[in-house]
Amino acid sequence: MNKGRFLIVIFTAVLFQNCGNNAAKGKPSSNISLPIEEYSCLPCGRSCDDLVSDRPGVCNECKMELVKKSSIVFKNILPKDLYGFMLQTGPENIVLLDVRTTEEFNGTAPDKFGRLKNAINIPVQQLEGRINELDAYKQKEIIVYCSHSHRSPAASYLLSQKGFTKVTNLQHGMHMWQQEVIDKKINDSLFIIQ
Ligand SMILES: [Zn+2]
Image (cartoon, rainbow, N blue to C red):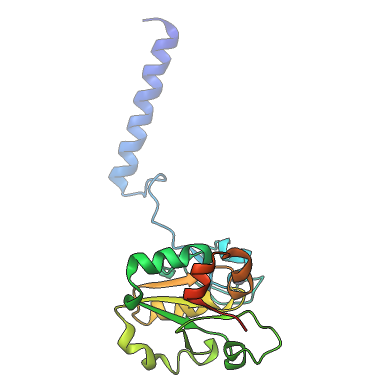
């Protein structure tokens, strides 16, 4: 056996002995770690949604509470994909939930972005208190939208926490609808201009 090979054998033997000793003494091995819970801000539709923390607290950017990332389970959909999703799912299985103010919903607010046909309006600030109004729709696909997709992610999160399992947030919000959805047939079917 040459010298180099001999040293490797000795080194390996010492290494194994050390591992054995640690195990015998019950020392935790350094390469075993518990899964770390990750936290991110209560979804606000801003870039800070992608930041991850290893502990609870408050988001430095949006000042929203940090929640367990594993509890954020709602889906997202782009305006251009909504019509196809509705056809596929069956319009009768879908509820459109507008979480803007009543004035925005009715088109009496200064910003007029339009709204979706047959949508229900419950402003996000009232959603928790009025959640029983949605009890009948627990088995349906709920599409949540607002103007800029900043309120609708928080509303989607709340619904998913309250036992609604099929919740989808409309990304970008109504202010982008007319730029992103240009098909006349889709707009005739879904969109009310204000
Ligand atoms: Zn945030």
